[in-house]
Length: 205
Image 1 (cartoon, rainbow, N blue to C red):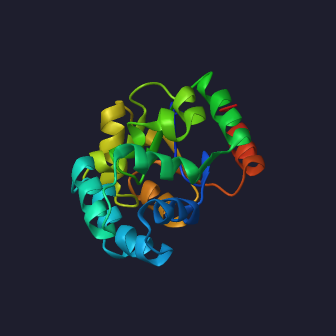
Image 2: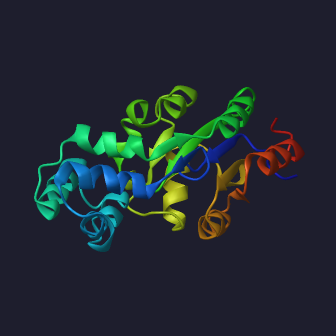
């Protein structure tokens, strides 16, 4: 008999909240006096964000290097304000997650640095309030980003959960495929209504 679902693991950006990268870039451009293209190059083209998401550098080092690349000191408050400007909670999806939480464990796994997950109350309080302490997890803790199986398996190890008893929900096809490769159940998010139907079909709401 197949193991029933005991944990639903949600992606953050694109599932629980909308993430507008251009708003984050614009905020930092205004702060530093740099062009939006310069900000994009500093964060993504340099590989800085990827290294932070994979846990290859500390949050302090990330902020320091970003400041050097942009020629302007970036504080934690600066970074959080830019991230918050880019983040909008999806109310209907959060209602569904709350409904799931009434009978199952719920958690978050996001390709992000710990700067985000450790300060969710300031970036997206609605998410921070819904999930218990220690259940909003970043790939930076695991030395790999989704879709690498290591990211899911080390996350589940921390949560003391089994892959076969976990449903993972993400809006990126490769991340869904990676979860399946790691032995999890997985669902490709396309919208709240379709997700509600999927959760209901599994008896999770």
